[in-house]
Each structure stands twice: as C-alpha cells, then as structure tokens.
Image (cartoon, rainbow over all chains, first blue to last red; front, side, top):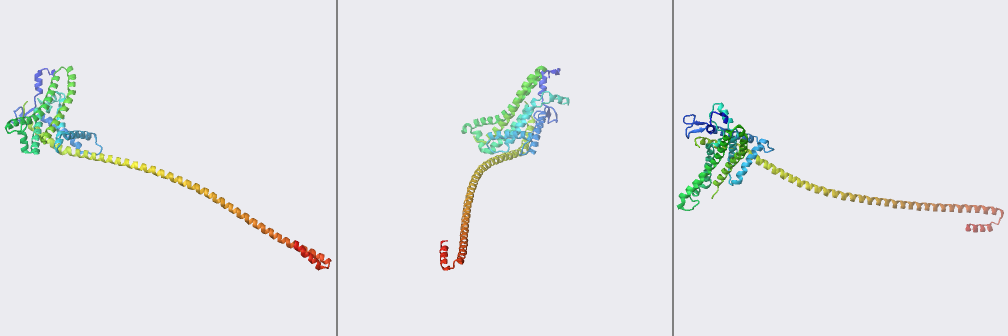
Length: 265
Length: 156
C-alpha cells in the first residue's frame, strides 16, 4: 500500500511481481535460470488442486443415486456441465476428455480465484513469517499456464497420431492446404505454426488476462485509501466474470483442440 | 516472462490431477447419475402404467355400475310382476273357494228340504191313516172308506 512510505510505487509493484523462487542447482532460495521452481505458484496450485480433488472425491465416495445432498448436487452439476460441453463438441468416445475438461475448469477457476483475494493479504502474512516474496495467483505465472497448455499439446499430438496414424498425420501436416509435392515445405511451415499456435495462444490468453488483472489490483492498491474500495470493488466484480470466463475458455478450447485431433480434415 | 522448471512441475501435477479425477471422481458420480436417470425413467413409466390402470378401472367401475342399475331395475320389475301375479292368484282362489262353498251350502239346503218333505209326507200319511182309522171305527163299511183313503193319499 501507498502507506508503506519508505518504498516507491515501482518498488512496490516489482516486489509484488516477484516470485518466491527456489534454485534447484544450488538448492537454495533464489533465481537459478531454467532450473528454478516458483515455490509460491506450485504451492498454491497444488493446494487448490487438493481442495478440488478432496471435495469432489469426498462427494464421489458418498455418492448416491437417490436424493442427492447439497455437496453431491454441486458436484453433479459441475460434472454434468463438463460432460455436456464435451458431448456437444466432441463426437468420439473417450474416457479421458470429460474428466480432463472438468479438472481444467475447476482447477483453473480456483487458481484464477486467488486473484480476488486482497493483493497484500497473503504476501504480508508471508512477510511476517519471513518469506520475502509471494505471488498467490498461479495462473498469472506463465510457467503454470504453459504447463497446462503444453500438456494439452502433447495430448493433441498423441490423439492425432493414435486416431489418424503417423502417415495420415504427416500428410495432414505436409499436404495441406496446397496438395502438391512442391509445396511441402511451405505447407509444413504453415501447419506447424498452426499447430504450435494452439498451446501458445491457449496459455498466453489465460496468463495475459490474469496477469493484467493482478497488475490492476496492484495499481489500485497504490491509490489512497478512499480510492481503493470503489475501483477495487468494480474491478473485482468485473473480474469474477473474467476468471470464470477464462477457465471456461481454457476448458472449451481444450475440448475443441482434442476433438479436432480426432477428426479427419 | 521467464520460463523455468516450474513448468515441468506443473505438467506433472496436472497429469496427476487428471488421472485422479478420471480414476476416483468421475466414475462413481457418473454411475450414480446414470442410475438416477434409470430410476426416474422407471418411475415415469410406472406412473404412466398406473395412470393407464386407473383409466381402465374407472371404465370398469362405470360399466359395473351400469350393469348393477340394469339388474336392479330388472329385479324390481320382476318383483312387481310377481306381486300382481300373487294378488291375482289369491283373488281367483278366493273366488273359487267361495263358489265351492256356495254350491256345497246349496246342495245341503236342497237335501235338507228333501228330507223335510219326506218326513212331512210320512207324517201326513200317518195322520191320514190315523184319521181314517177313527172314521172306520165309526163307519163299518171299510171297503168304501178305504177307497176314499187311497184317493186321499194320492192327492197328497
């Protein structure tokens, strides 16, 4: 907050955008290039994932085909929602895609939801325990969004090859859109770009939205106290829409990409 | 934007979570949903059947009621008929009986009249004989007198 006095605004922002890093080469806190773990992102992602799985497993254990309780009702609604989205878009048969869609939606939503917590709350609490840097929104970390989208990308490749076979998949990459031997290099470049654009756009969209959202919350936190709550309130309400929408988009696009991987062009 | 090993960690976590959802969350809930779907379908079918049964039962009840009314009317008519029949029979019987008694009485009366007549005749004859005897004791000419008596008897 601006009241912290001794530090400048830019220092405040930079402090907020700094991850709690762990260097895997030296096994100590600090930035070590690629072999670094963002402890805060991983910690919150795993924590939220566990909350999601615990809740859903708890409901699934006590599930009944009779009159459902409140928790079961909620879980059923979410599962049916994911299942319907998959059924509408994806016309193959797969035991993986619907649970995948559900996991993505709930998990991404929960990770996005961390954005709505006051920007200084958890970092301050962590600071009191001696932790210098803490970013609590995992999806505002490109590592996390790329982790998701690259996994989806591997699934796209896996299903493309599994369903179409190596030969057909290669043909798709080299003989489209121009069906001529002369155009193979051009086609290949074009198709590869198209293929790679999927995971990159998927992750950058989520990351960009959440990073921007977080940044705006940080900027609002720099305002004097009377300016914080109206702007913060408006942005938070608007952000409820964004975090849900982004989780939904990530799920939908994953389903669409995977169903495209299943279909012949 | 600095990519680092967090990405790998995230991928592993993601894979584990998907696997967990696929294994422990999805199947039981999906099974319960399908079971409930079955139950609801069954319930709806049962309701439909019950509705059909009710319709049939109602139709049957109306039919039975109709039948019962018809039977009641028939029975009442038969009873009415039988009643008049009994009354008629009783009337004719009474008439016959009275007729019979009347004829019997008449016959008896006739018999009694005949009887009286006969007795009377005998008594008259006796009286005549007695009278004649008295006359005869006075007039000896019995022969002439007996002729007279004979005529007398015949006249009576």
